[in-house]
Structures are given as C-alpha cells and as structure tokens.
Image (cartoon, rainbow, N blue to C red; front, top):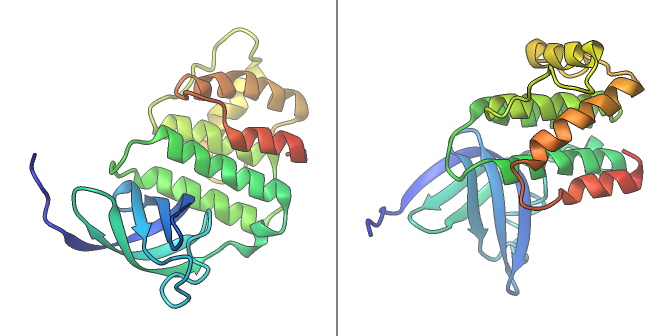
Length: 217
C-alpha cells in the first residue's frame, strides 16, 4: 500500500459533526472548500483552551491547520471565522442547520472537492444566522444540493403540480436564499418529490429531520 507522506495544509471548513474520543480527544468531520469532506482528530480538544476553544462545534465556520497523511488528519489548530450565533439560540434554526450539515455529511464522498456545495451550505447557514427560519429556504437548500450532486429529480412526475415544479425550477436557477417562497400546499408537494429523492441515497433516516418535526420546523 502506498503511504502518503505527512503534509501540512490549511483549509476553510464548516463543522458537520463531532464525536468525543477518549478522555481528551475529539473526532471531527468537516466540509472544506478545498478538499470536500474530511475527518480529523483534534488531540486534547476537550482540554485545550488555547488551540480549539469554542471552535469545534457543529456548523462552525473555521480556518484549519492540518497534518494529513494516509489516515485521519490531525488538527494543529482551528481559528473561528464565525460560529453563527444567530442560529444557536433557536431550536428550529438549529434543526435546519443540522439538517443541512447531515445531508452534506451523508451524501458526499471523502476528499472530493465541491466548492459549489460548500458555498450553498455556507450561504444557508449565513441566511439562518440573519433571518427567521423559513420552510422555503430549507427546500431551496435541498433541491440545490440534489442538483449539485447530480441527483436532480424529475419535476414532471405524478402528484406534482405545475406551480410546484415551476417554483423548484426557479429555486435551481436563482441561486439566492429568500428569492423563492413556497405556499403551504407547494411545500407539501415539494416534500413528496425531494424527500424520496434524498432517501434513495441514504441507508437510514435523517436524525435531523425527526428533530425538526419535534420542534415544529
């Protein structure tokens, strides 16, 4: 097996998920602008207030310094760009952000750059940080994620009205959160199309979607 030499790299990243490991370490899954999805170990993260203080939290936007080889990357340090404080005090916003991060984590391969998807995720988190949570924005994120990943659903299917198909098509064209608003009937129809298109590529249900249902999101 070819062993890649260790190299120092930097990355702009959004935290998708983390798991505490042992007494002091933390395993973190990131989505990076430069390399796509990465996993790294932050040694001593639960104890170190200097290198990782407040940085390794879900959906934080960071600048990372990494050591990379064949196995898990090792985090040298993480500088906070934003923790999106406007999200963290609202359960529906937290659920929406977790939904977006879970989709990106579970639908993307490791180390495959996807800068358009990084920008989509970042813009959604920024939107949630600054504006009330919107059901239309969440469907906007989902349909554009599917498009970027090459899983764009057929809009001309039974049970989907011309109005819903038109709104979904516009959502994939406009590129701006807040530009498209789905009335309640169209939201339900959009879910009839988007949820099965997403579930087709998952091996289990989304935990974040169940949480959103509990908090009314």
